Length: 198
Image (cartoon, rainbow, N blue to C red):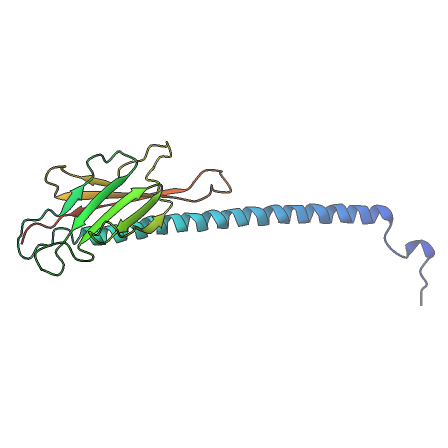
């Protein structure tokens, strides 16, 4: 059996310092990768949420607009009431449909007022003006290029006798992207043909 000499019992102080420096550099690199990966994941999650918000809002509005003008008794009602100043800070459209076929649009869900105000989309599904609006979406800016100018949400092909309404929704992330510092925006649109008299 060989005996160790006294000077060879462990690591020297220089070897320990070099080992710790290499370990610290490795951990620093790993931490940087983890932070970058976390930011990429957060950006992807924010992007998916913004897209989902825009698509869901568009889907809800299009579904209501497709019922516009349902007039089984041919009473001659207008399918929609348009916002006379669509570039204003509040953009709205009123959708009319005689869903219960009683010759008027006074019942629940037959007169739906949809409006975009203060980065929110809200609606009131009754002609009763005392009823409150219900918020259906937040973070809807309708500022597709980020220049601070809000584009109209409802664009008719004609202000006097519309046959098609183009609905444009631009959703924005509630906070900036952690990697770029910019807000994430996503725009969707749909052309909805209005129903003609039966």
